[in-house]
Image 1: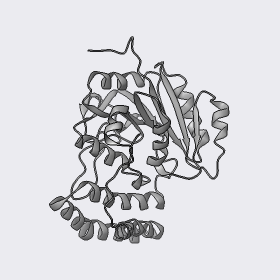
Image 2: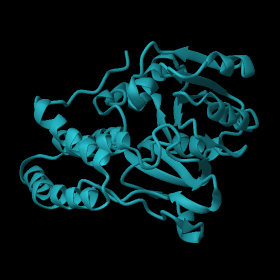
Image 3: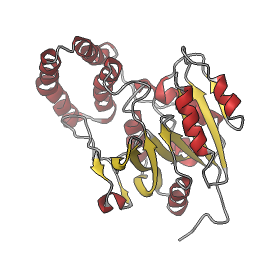
Image 4: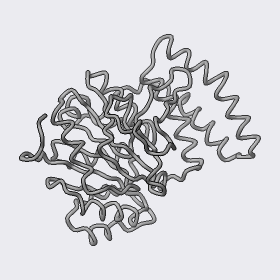
Amino acid sequence: MKTIETKYPLVSIITVNYNQSQVTMELLGSLRKITYPEVEIIVIDNGSPLDNPLKIKDQFPEIQLIISDKNLGFAGGNNLGIKASKGDYLLFINNDTEVPPGFLEPLVELLENDRKIGMVSPKIKFHWNPEMVQYAGFSEINRFTIRNKGLGYRKKDNPESDRLEETASVHGAAMMVPRSVIQKVGMMPEVYFLYYEEHDWAQRIKNAGYKIMYQPASFVLHKESISTGKDSPLKTYYLARNRILFARRNFSGFSFAISMLFQLFVSIPKNTVTYLAKRQTKHLQAYFHGIFWNLVHYRNLKSNPQLN
């Protein structure tokens, strides 16, 4: 097997900050200790209204800091990083993660040895309990529910999660993509703003003939949902909105009809009753706003931004 002992392709590490400079600096502190020698680190501040991102550059002068004048969402912020990057491989990593020193080498080596791989994610474990897995691959997105299942989710790390294997999708908290794949497929779809964009991107990369891989020889620790909150109306809105949007962009014919009927007659009534029973009126409002967004924005939304 080819190794990267004498050749180290440049890796662009891209992370997005939004009102979380301290959290971002904790990630950067762990990146300072990595053993892979050829990296550039790009931090995108997504128009933080309650933060001063310049302190990130003060503490970590080696990074490239790009300050957006508005919040471009997860995909839009990362796409700014793509445009500024120079690496052969691009690692998109959440700012609420921390990494061990040797996490990059297994990802790069895997991509160097198989040009048919279009994306790869490492094992993701919870920062608050590193013995518990958050991500060890994904199932395919169900054509009825428009949801997928996280393999190994909330299970103790064990040999079952240590198998290198093809998977249905990457995890947006940590994913590496070759530049050549982005040049062919395009950048992240910005229409989602938050949630589901990595699954849409993975689907397009698979449609272009590439494999999506899970690499357990690498791992990161994830603090999870720091920017949006684990149970916020904002998260409810975008999950409801983007679940249907994903189906609109990726399903067709019978599959699309079935998914919409399931939403109309099963998911929407069930979620409505659940929110009412829990008296979560803000979540209920957010949920319906997300659904109605798709009725208002009914035009075809197929394109991805292109990397020039």
